[in-house]
Image 1 (tube, rainbow, N blue to C red):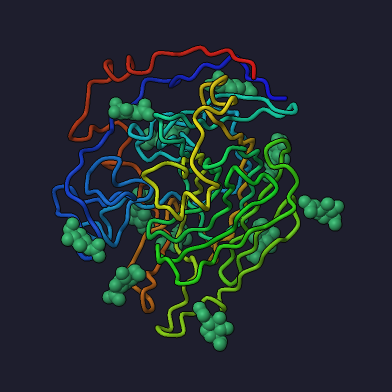
Image 2: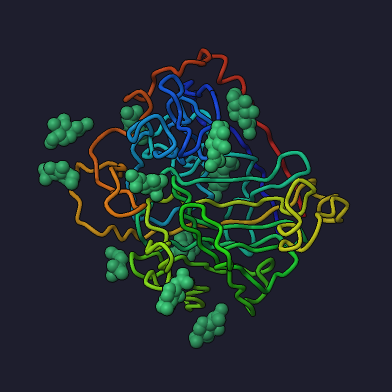
Length: 369
Ligand SMILES: *[C@@H]1O[C@H](CO)[C@@H](O)[C@H](O)[C@H]1NC(C)=O
Ligand SMILES: *[C@@H]1O[C@H](CO)[C@@H](O)[C@H](O)[C@H]1NC(C)=O
Ligand SMILES: *[C@@H]1O[C@H](CO)[C@@H](O)[C@H](O)[C@H]1NC(C)=O
Ligand SMILES: *[C@@H]1O[C@H](CO)[C@@H](O)[C@H](O)[C@H]1NC(C)=O
Ligand SMILES: *[C@@H]1O[C@H](CO)[C@@H](O)[C@H](O)[C@H]1NC(C)=O
Ligand SMILES: *[C@@H]1O[C@H](CO)[C@@H](O)[C@H](O)[C@H]1NC(C)=O
Ligand SMILES: *[C@@H]1O[C@H](CO)[C@@H](O)[C@H](O)[C@H]1NC(C)=O
Ligand SMILES: *[C@@H]1O[C@H](CO)[C@@H](O)[C@H](O)[C@H]1NC(C)=O
Ligand SMILES: *[C@@H]1O[C@H](CO)[C@@H](O)[C@H](O)[C@H]1NC(C)=O
Ligand SMILES: *[C@@H]1O[C@H](CO)[C@@H](O)[C@H](O)[C@H]1NC(C)=O
Ligand SMILES: *[C@@H]1O[C@H](CO)[C@@H](O)[C@H](O)[C@H]1NC(C)=O
């Protein structure tokens, strides 16, 4: 049984108008120009928030165009504390002390299930799903998310890590199989000839029951766990591409991302639709009665395992030139992670503060499912 509390989705404070302006597309061979120097995670040049989370240093104007990546902090992030979640990413200024999470797409609401306060991520026919990203990065560490998945074919619940170079580690849950979870990993966005994906079975009902899913990412080993029990181990030494000699193992600082996304829609590739259990049924009684699909996330705990000691002045990770073939160096930095080196400076497309505040009128929603 799942009760929604009275929910107020609002931005607590008047936000600084940071924003950003979009320019051309970008990739490693065609990086951004100096006017829109930052290549966003979606491959568009821009300034302002384009230079924050997910900004790709290799495809940006220069290696230091992207803002430094906020350093890992060990913590148990209780997601029902929505004061730590910025509901619209475009207003983020890079201050990871102010927010733990940003909503990059979609919307969330407070929900309690089996007595545990949580947030629900929504998917509607129009919102394209919901994506939350951590404001801090992890450069090795053990990350556990306590969650309940969706249960609808074509609807995928996901808990992943993603780096600015598209190193990726996944726990994903296609909603047609609520006793299974898929683990996977990618190096620099390369799709391997044979998938690295593995289906973990016998998990118990992931829709009805809370489970702790762990990604334990260490420099030499990647371990996936369910409720503290190991289900899969990957060794970095087994990820050597024998043709190139490159170790194709995630090794760059990564954000944590939580999402509910539509895989069963006509714009997705046929293989993705099949993987997710088919097309989404927008006439599903659950969807019709609630007006959305949802997945629940209670908390995310992070135990950082940075490989070299740091002192208290370290604020961030920065990319340097490659140390080995195709592997950029990662260093600590004391540089600010904020846009324009300050919290309240305007982006080029900024709006006055008073106008911004009125965009976020509070909405009160009371529902019973
Ligand atoms: C969600 O619930 C928590 C208490 O569990 C409360 O502190 C928070 O303000 C609520 N958030 C919203 C958006 O209502
Ligand atoms: C990189 O972007 C340029 C410009 O959009 C495009 O012509 C080129 O095909 C892209 N290269 C790759 C490898 O995608
Ligand atoms: C976030 O704010 C931007 C700028 O005002 C707006 O265009 C966008 O629609 C907002 N996103 C959401 C999900 O509300
Ligand atoms: C960042 O956020 C923290 C916590 O809200 C605040 O104390 C600090 O002043 C902010 N830093 C800047 C430069 O705005
Ligand atoms: C984890 O292991 C414990 C001890 O062997 C067992 O009782 C429990 O059922 C396991 N949990 C899962 C999800 O397999
Ligand atoms: C490379 O070769 C080693 C030894 O034969 C093997 O264990 C490993 O799986 C191979 N790597 C890949 C990515 O196929
Ligand atoms: C985080 O804290 C909550 C609330 O105390 C707890 O229920 C949850 O198990 C913790 N999560 C982890 C992964 O330790
Ligand atoms: C990771 O960090 C935790 C907490 O500091 C520590 O107990 C653990 O031994 C570390 N693990 C590795 C593999 O370094
Ligand atoms: C702190 O660490 C940084 C980065 O490793 C280094 O540049 C700096 O000198 C250190 N500061 C102190 C006071 O040790
Ligand atoms: C450095 O590594 C990046 C990312 O793997 C790669 O795209 C680039 O070609 C490398 N540069 C050189 C000079 O090897
Ligand atoms: C970073 O450290 C250097 C060397 O210790 C110091 O000169 C500089 O002022 C520091 N920068 C910041 C933003 O703290």
